[in-house]
Length: 248
Image 1 (spheres, rainbow, N blue to C red):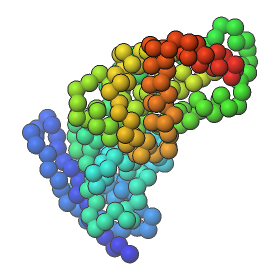
Image 2 (image 1 turned 90 degrees about the vertical axis):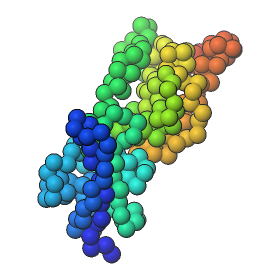
Image 3 (image 1 turned 60 degrees about the vertical axis):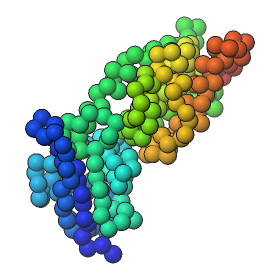
Image 4 (image 1 turned 30 degrees about the vertical axis):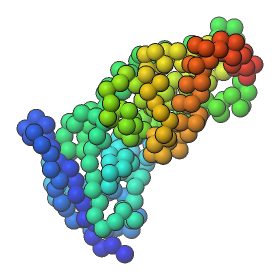
């Protein structure tokens, strides 16, 4: 069993440093320790200048997203057991760095504001009555905690200059489009404005999702299919719309 945890933490303040570096620390191991525990120990006991972002410590806020040994993960959900002799912690590479492990993810709020809002049917009455299967289909996407790990791992966002909104925002669109009371089809918007066609469905976003949302299979692929139907097969698009109304 480990007695000490060896940490290598990325450090940089872009306001004063052109290049970053890694500082090495050793912290005492506690059974069940997660990476956030170790990083917080460094901040509280060794180097108080270390900047990190965290909130709930329960994998529900998404604040402590980082890259651990090169893989996007939540620090509060990743146990140090099994990570090897040395644990490397670095900020998400898809976003501008603020300081150390803290990145600027504010562009996501700009993108979310561009997505057409929920538009309920005027003839639905109140209270709304929906089939349970229709509710569950939309509910999966509402588990998203906006950690943006899926955005960070997406090579289209990280390596190419494209208008692609990214998997988190496709999930948001899917949560609205699959709602049985919603009247809009946002697939055309996502295809034209959100760069949906740039996604090549390699499923890396699904692999890192801490809420186990089937991002590729249940959100991205259906949105792509709807966009294609709308453009090349309007009859199929009409059938989809009628099926949605019957689910309410």
